[in-house]
Amino acid sequence: MGFDQPSLKGRALRLLSGREHSRQELERKLARFEEEPGSLALALDDLQAKGFISEQRVVESVLNRRAAKLGAQRIKQELQTKGLDPQRVAEAVVALRSTELARAQAVWLKKFGAAPAEVSEAARQMRFLAARGFGGDVIRRVVKGAGDVDGFDAETIDLT
Image (cartoon, rainbow, N blue to C red; front, side, top):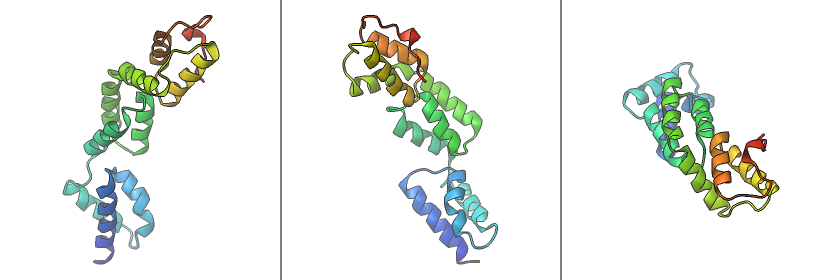
């Protein structure tokens, strides 16, 4: 027993040294190494009590790494898959929504840099932003604001 727990802790610390992980992620990644039932939970309890596992740091880490490239919806999904507290995820998403337009414009500018010349190009640009989790209203504002395309109405393009 004494040998198993440090091994699990060591593995967990190695994972945490690369990036922040939620408790659920660590459980999923380390479950196959657990030889004695309950030893993984004890190891993770100890690491959490010592502050090595922190939901707040996981949220901040994801926001720092992903917010410049992805929309609030996509980041929300990523946070949810990490098994974080729904209230904490909701608060993070609210904060992201306030910068959604500026972030979408930056992503669009980096990828395209020029207004669409035709409707098919506008649709392609809109799908690009939608795939990155930006909301439909923000996408329309970004692409429509990029320039007027003959016969193009951003409101009528289907983003699905």
